[in-house]
Length: 258
Image 1 (cartoon, helix red, strand yellow):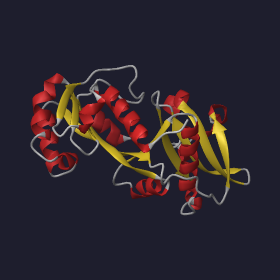
Image 2 (cartoon, helix red, strand yellow):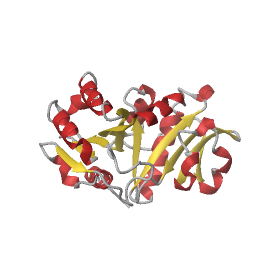
Image 3 (cartoon, one colour):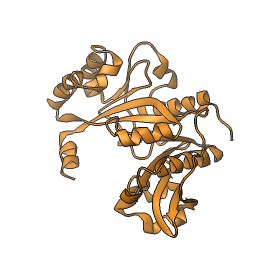
């Protein structure tokens, strides 16, 4: 199945609309939109729904998906500052301070990437690349491949590409079928084999395989994870949207203890 960049962006917005319980066109408005969060079966599988406070921006505005209890807090916040500043400090302290009074704290922030079909091409790898499927993943659920595969949601790991030095797996890109139309890519390379363009070769190959199967690949990274962002860009992906999620303070504390 062939796509255009516009079609891939539309698929992403449609999925974000399901996740946020809004309409895809809400992401293209000039004004911010605040909606009531709801658990929907078509949402990305790893999301914890309904949200208390979840912000999404595709660059035009902010769509906030919230628990009604926090509607006024979040609405006042997103309308107080420019959209791009709502996802960073010092402005972000305003939201965190307001939510913390009710036991919430800002927890997750991430940038999401979509392929630019004009830039995406399968890059050369200095090692043999092999296509892997679910039946191949069993022994690979170990810390070395924890970005490429997710042990907690093994059933969603549907496809992978491995780089092999002889019979030794030295790099792995895997994708999870997090929702019906989009598969998310994660990648790991053994420390001794890094800086050899293995990650970008695996990522670009897996992206092409996903597109061939009629799905839209996407890639997520913290914006401070320069290595991961560079890999996304080198592999033919471009920034598409950002998200921010607040969770109960107890959850945040537990995450920090891990």
